[in-house]
Image (cartoon, rainbow, N blue to C red; front, side):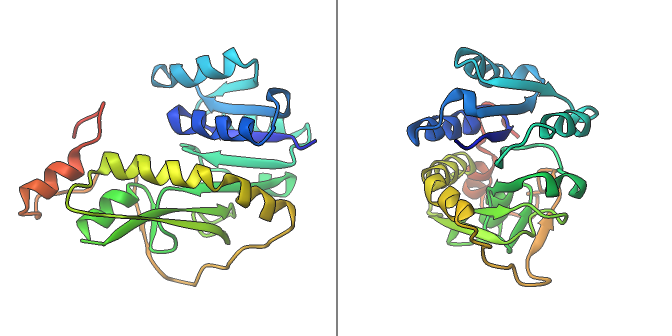
Length: 220
């Protein structure tokens, strides 16, 4: 019986847990490490309802909380919608995988979908990969693609990316359990984008600006 640690927050992580339930994972096989914040209330209520073992953490407490949880063996650690950086000293304690909402290696860091729209790309997507000491640099387990069209918004693309990626979870976990090492990312390819919304002042297409800015319930 596999034991999983889930590091994440919000609606995407609820969807991930539902997928694990569909794959016959029981709530007592799960431990959740999640953000202690008012905007994460719905997720916290969800894990409470299913009586999943959980720890609420903050940026300053994360390392200590993670170390404590990993003292009890976890077969696989799944990171999704995770606002924390996992330090390399913990990676030997389990198998760590992450879902990055952007196509690696081209779009690393934050706001990958937004940057793909700014670049005029015909597609965005996401990447399941192993976690390594270098952020978004681990071997790729599965990439998924979502087309960008003239009606796409950052909001719609973000939901499409997570929805498709979570549907691929079973295959990703099977590959991990079989010892599949994944595909190595090429060296020095792509750009790392910081966690700040990009400047759109040079974009003349007002429709494109509006579609990039559409991120309810937060509007830029």
